[in-house]
Length: 121
Image (cartoon, rainbow, N blue to C red; front, side):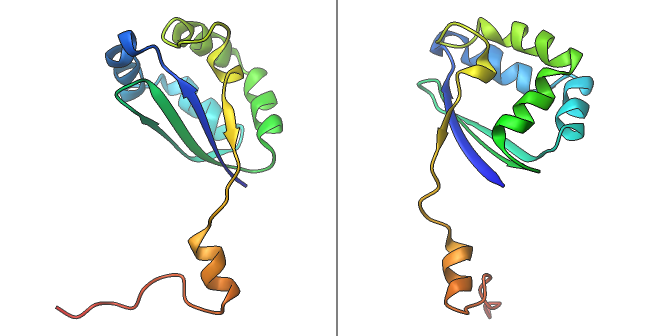
């Protein structure tokens, strides 16, 4: 299952947020991996808009519940909380977005290959 979500970083703290994510704690990385988060990516806009995309073994709620049971998650959320525009734990303020288009799915439904043939130079 792939999900996309948004959140909002306080624009005053964009540099701190970027720095924290350039060197995520090893135990946090391991916890994400061990609780089923795959190909997790974050994108940050100049206005603080944060967009995340992640592949999960099952539902977002289940993955979030598994993370909540790890010791490192509470420490990470506390460290990140002041960098976000909203009050509360950052991982509780994410807004899930509905997927409305999937190129590969539509190509496959038509029986077409999902990757383009090689181009000649």
